Amino acid sequence: MHPTKRRDLVMKTVQVEGKVEINKLSDELNVSPMTIRRDLVQLEEDGKLIRTHGGAVLPKPLITETPFSTKQSRQTEQKKLIAKKTLPLIKAGQTIILDSGTTTLELARLLATRDDITVITNDIKIAAELIDSQLKVLVAGGELQNNIGALYGPQTHQFLKNIHVDTFFLGAHAIDMEAGITSPTFEKSLIKQLMIEAAETTWLVADSSKFEQKAFSKVCDFNLLSGFISDENISDDKKEQLSSRIKII
Image (cartoon, rainbow, N blue to C red; front, side, top):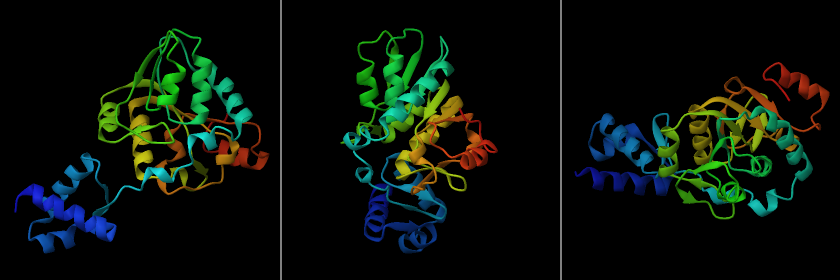
């Protein structure tokens, strides 16, 4: 069977069942498990599925996220405070990544008056905020996530795999002492993971409403972060718990 036809059959199976298992596909298609693994690797690179232990699943749809227009009106003052606290960490000559999100958008607004750093982002709203600045701005390619403004997909992945930067400012959907940093979708988590890998240091920037929350897909544990910048509304007990795991500003 031609590889293209076999991969089409794999995709039909995962679309019907929601997931596939390597050993089961191997038996059904009469090929070796290694052949199926190669098929799954290729399909993942094409952005069609996400590999898991022993198989693969469909990417969770990105449209389930909170629209930008809704997020923009939440915790506005807290996000502005976080941006001000973050600013001193960004030194002249550095190259930074700004994650997609409304907290990092507030940071971009403060950076717009500077001319001494390079900013990389996968968020078109952040890029638009910097369009009249003197900063060097690079935008990761990819497919536009409607109502959010983020770019995602194989082109985004490839871009992030080929860069190296000083600092990544990571936004968060959910933060939990046990679960770590989590995101609503596999795709969001993967992009954040690639940004972490591309950076020398990673700082988490998120308001207190994200704390003690869990989302679907794991991004990372606290040990991969240099610190956590938040607002003043985290209780002393929670700050004490967090400070044992991560530097808090």
